[in-house]
Length: 147
Image 1 (cartoon, rainbow, N blue to C red):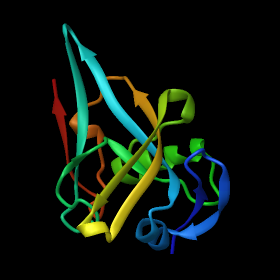
Image 2: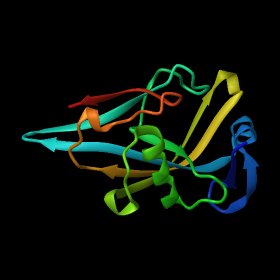
Image 3: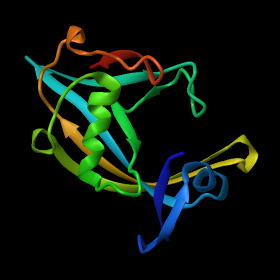
Image 4: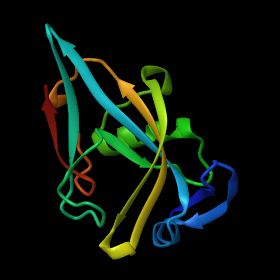
């Protein structure tokens, strides 16, 4: 079972709770988001992951290129592990650029699922080929690129 750090809306640390409890009660927690983008000639492209049909949350929808929760014993920078786990691309924190920390909330299933996140958003802006990806099938069904 995953355990995450819990914060108040001002990002004061409160304690630790299970992922299930966090989403049931709508507790604030940290996530890592890494967008892939590249410039090819005059065009700029961004990559989206198609979430697996098996995912409990938002199955088979387009999402951030790679994202995940920051576990209770991790730093934000440790979130880079998500890129290799989900996409098979090995990066270091020095390969990506921090863009922002964005607090946001999503409520679905009539309040049964409340996702309050401090999303730490990063950007990887190097050309990458579709064949470079090795997808974690339990998490990712595909990769799409859009101009």
